[in-house]
Image 1 (cartoon, helix red, strand yellow):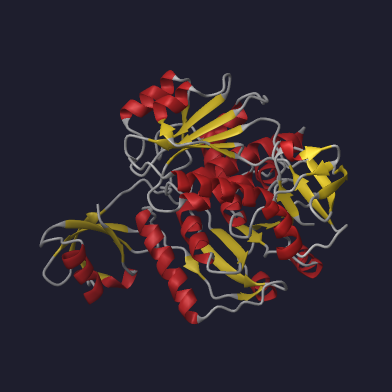
Image 2 (cartoon, one colour):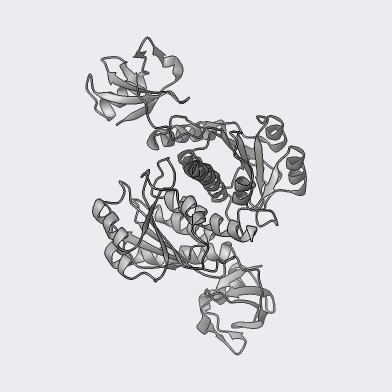
Length: 242
Length: 242
């Protein structure tokens, strides 16, 4: 079924006040006719089954879907890679189940992307959430310096800093040797060239545990997808066993 | 250090017979001068430290690197996705440590890529292997029908067919509940729209175990990277613990 993303404030008294663009999209692009049904997710976890009307939509019921969402927030702090690869990263991490992506300006990446880029990433996150039938649209925060990011994180949380080929225990080993909790999981992935010593010290001060993603060299664009694959598999697999 | 890929037959009596392109690349693109050193991997596991000469290269010694390779072959059977995304998939899976990629022509993908495409994927695998400092260049086989692929697989092997959101046990759960062996691991990932019932039956006949990659919907381009991340993490993590 066709699915669009709305904001919670668009729903009043079982009516969805669609924007002109949303109504146009549903009636002219998707070609729904009056009374045809679609799903509207409000990006915070609610999913409505609705029928299109002449100007908006009528809520039929709150759709009860098996939630693909994790119990706990999963936050990715990711040094901005060179080039335009961040688009792909946002898309894949949204599919995987990330809750928040925080682009980091690190010592070895001085990129400060334009506000247009940020808007673009948010749009990609929304589209990817719709396509992968998630109920939550990940938040893409503004790029910030690592120190600012570390200072503003939710607490308590389980925090992991991935370092390429360091002599650290493997992320999966650590996740599975830690008693399962519903604490937010925060993963930080460095830039090309890796984190500087100062950044690693800063992370340790902020209670990050240093972990490895294995013996192979991953690009900045691949590493976050690998890390999130491991986090999601560890959570899913622990639930499987329970 | 600069690294290039050669074939085993290029090495004789401690001399490397570089091709004209390789010599040109090292002396004109990378701008090495006579006696400057570089590394040559032969794609099958050997890594040579060599010095450039006027027309070729002299082996200084066999470089002993900590091998980033897994003990067992890791084979990915992947239904060809629409579009040109297979490039990205080959690149990421090479970084992750795949040994062989077999593009599959499935009931729901009728694409039969040109020989140029295959050459392109092989070149990408070689470049990605060099960049990620692997010792083995993954083999990219010719696209084949699923039945032909299943009939020609190495045996014995641990074989897993990933099905989107099926009620199957999670790949990680299965990998970790199976006693660790050095058997080849074969992972099959379906096309957009998933495997047909006939393909699933065929896989079961060929001793594939059906597994899930979690509750979320992954694109055909993301799923193989997620599956390989899980396989590699399970192997690495098991070694960590030993």
